[in-house]
Each structure stands twice: as structure tokens, then as C-alpha cells.
Length: 157
Image (tube, rainbow, N blue to C red; front, top):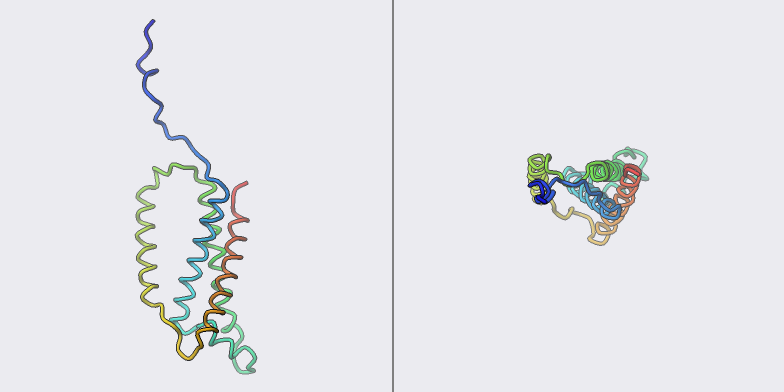
């Protein structure tokens, strides 16, 4: 008895595999926190440092939105970026052969943006190192919490 030639060839068609939830949450959390960190560096360069603005929070003249704005911006950006990352990872099955060029372009843009942000990073003047570290860790903790919420709400169940 002869077998057909198609029976002898291995099946090389791409099989859609699902990514584990832990990996989705970890990737989304990392992307959200890195985006918040990049925004924090950019806002610090633009004059919205997290520590220096808190001196004006109890002043009657200063706008409190200027004080709370960078905190809301970092938390909001972490929420949005992690939500978009979690939505993409949970809804698009592997392998991503169709999006190969798009992934390379997105990777090149991300590397360029992070290189530009890295050149802008500098310690703020007139602020103690301890206060700067405490404010940065507080902002990144808030960003991590919001990134986790963004990932949780957008993961496909």
C-alpha cells in the first residue's frame, strides 16, 4: 500500500498559541512603568519636577493643578500603555508573522525615543537626593499600580 506524498510532509502551518497570563501582566506592567519613567524624565526636563512642585501645594497663589499634573500624567500614561500592551498580547495570538515589519518599525521608534529621553535625564537642581529618590519611587509605585489596573481591565478573559 502506498501513502500519499502529502502524508509524509510534516505540518508546518503556524499554530495559534496563547500567551500565559503572567507573562501578559508582567510585560504590560513593565511597558507601563517604563513609559511613566520616560514621561517623568521629560516633565522634569520641562520644569515639572516632582519634588520642587510640592513646595507650592500649600501656597495660596500657586495653582494646585501644576503640582498634581505630573503625578496624574505619569499614572495615566502607565494605565494607557499597559492597557494597550495587555490588549494586544491577549487578543493577537502568536506567531506574529504578519506584523514583522510593523514590529521592527515600532522597535526602532521606541529605541530612538528612549535614547532621546536618556540624554535628557539629569538630577534636578536645588533638590536633595533623598527627596528626589522618595518622590521618584512614589511616582513609579503609583505608575506600577495603575499599570497593573490597566492590564487587568484590558486582558481578554
